[in-house]
Image: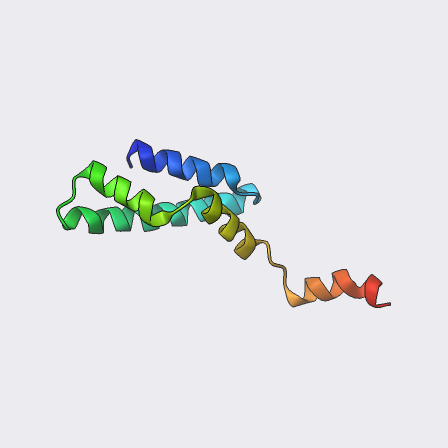
Length: 90
């Protein structure tokens, strides 16, 4: 992977507020998607650098991506929500 994409992933990793195992899982999945997109862009005739720059632009803000990932992973179950709200309900 190119330096630009490594910086992007480092930025996402730095903005995630997940436990280490969840962070690894998220970053690995994101890397897989990036590699797939890079291959797709390279097949259209872009150079490695052009494909990497295009990929970073398509992904958008690393901070925003990290925030959205955090929101998706930090939601508890209905059971957890109910147990947490019990003192307030009683």
